[in-house]
Amino acid sequence: ETVRRAIATAPETASRDLGWANPDTGSSGTAAVSASIEKDGSLCRAFATTVNDTRGVRRYRGDACLRMDGRWQLYGIVADDAVLL
Image (cartoon, rainbow, N blue to C red; front, side, top):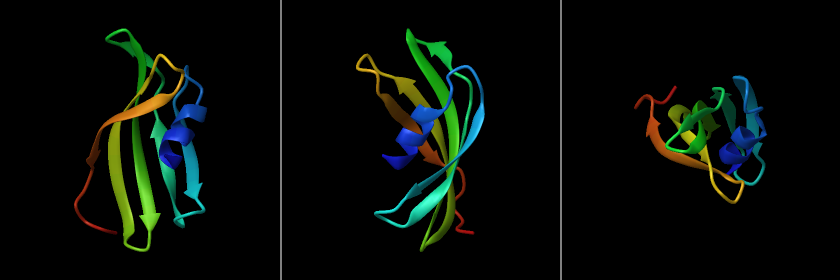
């Protein structure tokens, strides 16, 4: 949820690198968000994020698309690597 909210704050017309933190879990990371494109009638953007927590740093990537209700939804999230740093 914290990553989704960070992605939602990025301007739709520009690529951005954003920091995020979840005070409830103690995890944090960065999200690199691309500029929005239209995909199947929806506004979507690709993203890559890191998650830093007690298990180490992991990388993920996926897509976020703007829903009809105005919220961004994350799709197709996959691990970029299987090794903890």
